[in-house]
Length: 576
Image 1 (tube, helix red, strand yellow):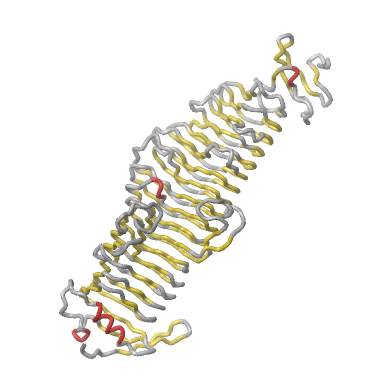
Image 2: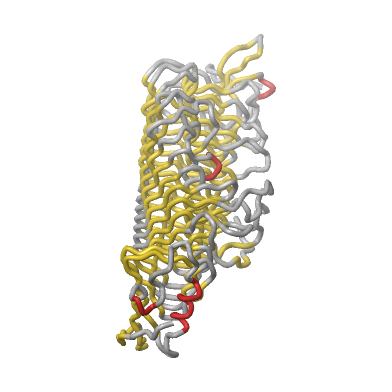
């Protein structure tokens, strides 16, 4: 090889002086000129890298040319690769060290290659194009693997990514693909464009995966895929990127402390189960100010969170432009075994999607100040929880949401101990279902009549014991058969100060109500109240004075009242 002339330049980075030589790879003296693009120039490039003086870094400039690198190359620390109108056809893997800058290169994987490894700290991957990547060996396809702290991935294009051919074994690496794999590293991923991702199994444009640490507290003690462990915390920021989704998910988070902010997602021909964003076994993940634009036939799952402590989904916009999948059971947001979750201030416009939020085994869930517009003809749920005796939810609050829907909605409140449903406005038909839940308050909501004959329906499907329910200050718009129906024995139920904009009975209590403690507070019109046979009058409970029980015995149908010591009729006669 001909001798190479070096131009010495001195840079100061952090507290260390790094001396870098400038090498023009496009000059005739480099030895790369004159080789056809189909030839392998790995050996020449490696020889140039090896010629860098010991103790020096380098700026490798590639301008107005295409080279082919079919084998692996390791760039030393402090070596930059900077291009202008430059292309590298890859067959191998390129690995960069500490404080590397990779800029202005089109990397073409030719559908048979390795990937790019940013293994050193404080590297910058800027303004490149990564196209046509498919693993050359059995395993997952990874375009850019980041394992160095302080890495910036900015303003790159990732286009056409495919996995190694599928082997029909679900869950292994073969059939999976990634654009960026961030492995236990502090990293900023911003202003990139992702498109044309394919995958037989797992596929994510961005996959964040940190070290697994022991975590023997809930929800990490749940026995799903990973038990008693959580992914450690690294400062990963995924901001202001654009995603064009074909069939797989966009972002998978297996790491704590991740921020997903101000990204734009164009969701097209998605598979529902993939999820636009997935969070697993992590803590303190913030998802905010993103825009999700859906043109898919199948409505997508925007967020799937499983075994997570502390996830915030706020100030996002979801616009579903079209969907023909009527009759599905899909959920926009799916929560399973999560704690300290906040879903607030989002603007949601969905079509033919059965469920806004599905939840199971959650603690301290707040759904607050969301604006939801449900289009299409599919009858659905504002909130939904599957029915199972193994489920348990604690402190679920639904506050200040505004919702309208073409079809009726159900607000399902299932297996919950503690919470508040307050200040919500439903501009279309809705029914609140309190199923096997206790110690909650429904107050100051505006509920509009739909096809259902009840505004509030309370039942105990698995006999957990209903107690401590306040239904106060709500406005019921429409003519109901019963505004409130309690279909199972309940304790400590207060109904008061509600406004009825229509006809119908305020409260209906099932005839099997033998242990009732339902309190009437002035301000609500009572038509049906506590009733049953004389032998089934409530006994042994702290009843409020004035509690009414209507006798249903055939020989004496009349109301009686509790005066604090016994039951009396309207004449003041003790009923024994």
